[in-house]
Length: 206
Length: 108
Image 1 (cartoon, each protein chain N blue to C red):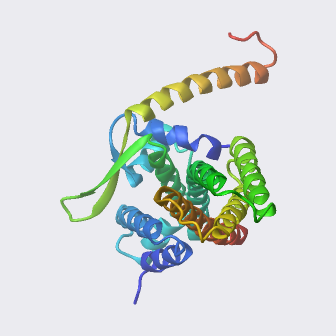
Image 2 (cartoon, one colour):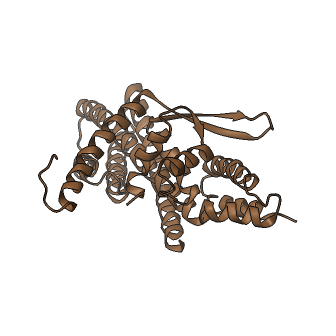
Image 3 (spheres, rainbow over the protein chains, first blue to last red):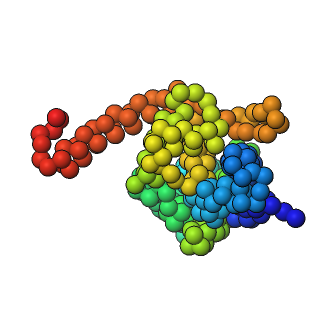
């Protein structure tokens, strides 16, 4: 039969299941702490000694919620750095496309280059304001990523209209890197949104 | 109120040397005369946060009895942050003392 400490650790692992690495670390440290605290109890070995150690440790859900809040804050900060790198790469790729298409002659579309340019400027603006004012919020990050996706889609769409003209290798490479970066970032932001919702649920349950 | 100062309290508890979570909590309890009897588990998220910020370093060790423990130590940056927080706290507590002591001049 599992002891009081084992039950507690299982609950803590469940509450931290959204981050397996954090769960492993936290459960390992909690286990070491609880065993030591229980062994220091005058009534050790007994279920009461374990229960007292667990009570002093605090609610598993409260500790998991605090861990989750810290982890999400860290992730959001890292996402901003990734966003700024993606904005820089998108700018480089956009300039390369403009130089190339300028040589070919842009006769087909007027709308795509406008979308490409202005969604990029919007992404840059949202990123700058978001970074300086709402650094710990996901919403401006998501808006900036959406604007970047629109900018890249318009740029690729515009370039696609010139499929007849072979694009230079550096233009293709830059486009591939910007697509990969923004794809990873969008995937990450969606995951972060899910994690924020789980963190909010944990905090509400405390 | 204690939660707002938990990071500084944890840094101060590690000033005398590396320690594991259980020992850190025991240090906090004994040095505060058992005034700070916070739920023991709440110190771990603070330890992780301080480590992520580069103020603490940690590594797993094994005791002679075979128990694994993560031992934390103050980094140079952590020591600097503690010194700054100590100064801030000194200013803050002197100001609050002056206010609560009924209008005596500050600094006393």
